[in-house]
Length: 132
Image 1 (cartoon, rainbow, N blue to C red):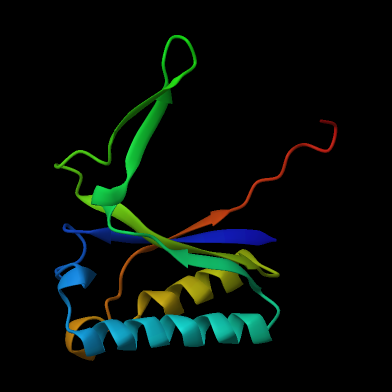
Image 2 (cartoon, one colour; image 1 turned 90 degrees about the vertical axis):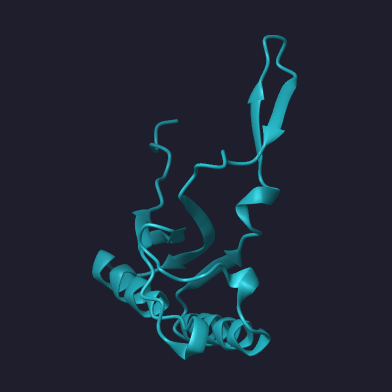
């Protein structure tokens, strides 16, 4: 079963400054932690893909206009309090295993090496019905 683990950041749930304001060694420790998690998942045959995302102000919102042409606006509104920071797709035997991986990822270090304990959303990856 494939699950997507979504790393959420929020001013409401995390009292941590944005990663782009951390000290260089704090960012390095965070990235090293993520690499080690990914290596463990690869060794277990559970890793499918993982990516971090740029900060939300680099995002674009796109919708089709009346003629189908893209209408593009800048990223999330300024009042947006939460944003998606990255994700993993894992292929595991159970929902419990996906939750265990999410809990481990949640402990990634932040400023001063303190675990962030950030919320990780766990969603089963859907599949199209077999008769389509």
